[in-house]
Length: 198
Image (cartoon, rainbow, N blue to C red; front, top):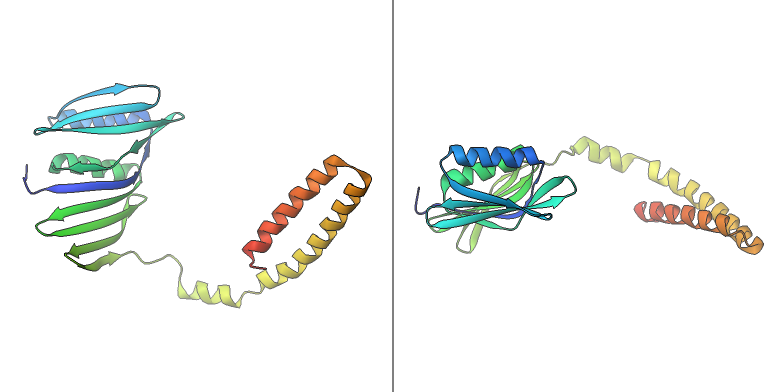
């Protein structure tokens, strides 16, 4: 074990089924770790002995699946590799901070893939890697040239006027069911107007 090795895992958003947790336990045992686990109605807890430290991995039950909770500081390279395999296999999200000498390398991971890599030395930081967005320049130009939003906006105003008249009629005649239905339609039209920035 490298004594200067230190990795912190933050903002973990990993979801698993029971089989993946069992695979993790199997991998830990195969790597020679001393461990034990326990389970309640809410949590599945794996305690791993790493040198003199005891690392407790907590998995919260969410219906019939699990999600890992908490931040973890790992000082064991093999254990760190297993945790990263878990992030990759579950296509999870995480912020991984690697401490080396006097600098920190921060990886932002989404869906098991590094999207941003930043190196921090003292007060300075530099972006080593940033994944390009999936939107192309041509798609942006098409979006600006599109008239669909303007066309929908004029139709939306007519639909809104009509629905308001339907609601007025339902109120004057005291039809409760029609009033509730009309209010629902008005709410969805309002949401669409907000999306179109009207």
